[in-house]
Image 1: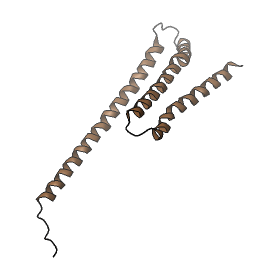
Image 2 (image 1 turned 120 degrees about the vertical axis):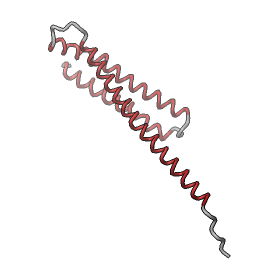
Image 3 (image 1 turned 30 degrees about the vertical axis):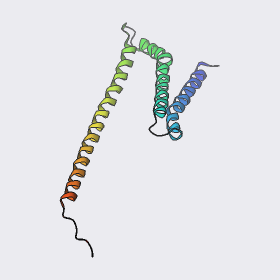
Image 4 (image 1 turned 60 degrees about the horizontal axis):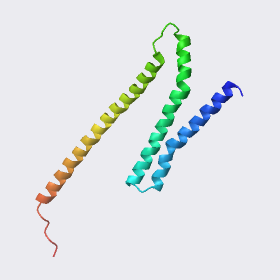
Length: 136
């Protein structure tokens, strides 16, 4: 087989397996009871396995080709620039994810506080209001 054909087959298989294991927790969510520890553990294990598949793909398949590309584009640099770029990209995505989590989590907490204050005000108003006259 030609090298291009093998690369296309490998890329397709990796994409299909990653998609399958990425969507598997959604299907198992319906099968397992909601809120059970078993469900949480199974979903966590599957997500970790999917993340491991993606990391293995990066380190075994994409890293050598990227290293070759950097060596051709920048032959005078002896520093492991490929690894630095990959780590910088990983940490950039991590920091973006953490930032978004902080932004949305803070909004969620503020919304809960508002709803709690509103519920307390409604409760106080209903308890302090005079009782309606009984119908005779």
